[in-house]
Image 1 (cartoon, helix red, strand yellow):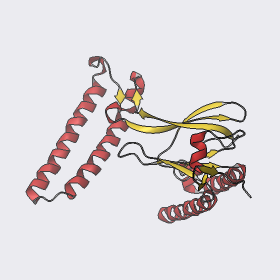
Image 2: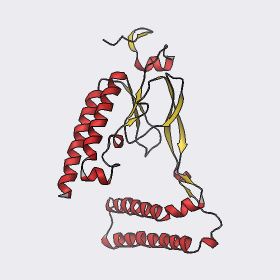
Image 3: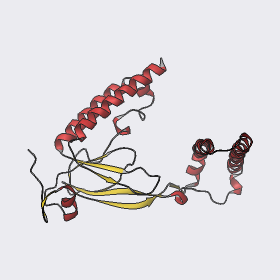
Image 4: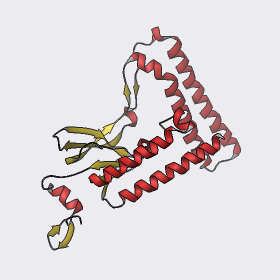
Length: 244
């Protein structure tokens, strides 16, 4: 029964994605590639009509999903927000700019670090096993070497587990402890925009979901923005047509 419910939810999310794609295909988007290993960032510039239609889809989808057993138990897996990031659904922006900066995870509060130790260990272990095993499987080697490398992986996990136990059982011996992924920091895109109410906002753009900006410039575009969307007529002449 659980499997049938999951398949049903997968089907409904595929319907949602198709409906949203049908709306977005009429609008331009910008694509930003940052560091290797980071998915490209995609941002759509849409108008009020698109936002209204997207919000209707969001309400309809989330209301239907909330009635299901999976929805009641875990709203994070299949909700609209899982697949699309609406940056400003309440009011349009008339100006925006994109910047790039290194970002990483950082937790310095001692109690919060201790609260997350088990989770951090499990995430690291699963990722280490997944990528390590995939690398071994992709490398030509005899069975003896394969088994040896696999054993080394589990030894490393056991060593990490001993560190975990020491940290948990001997907090008085730990002078300082932090969670930080700075050594693995990646460059990500951030958008700064101003709404029609003159409110200035800064939002980190998502690499896993399309980002959607309700954009309604009330003044002429900057040259950079103009050149991105303008049609080249001839020579040095460019233009933007009025929407029909």
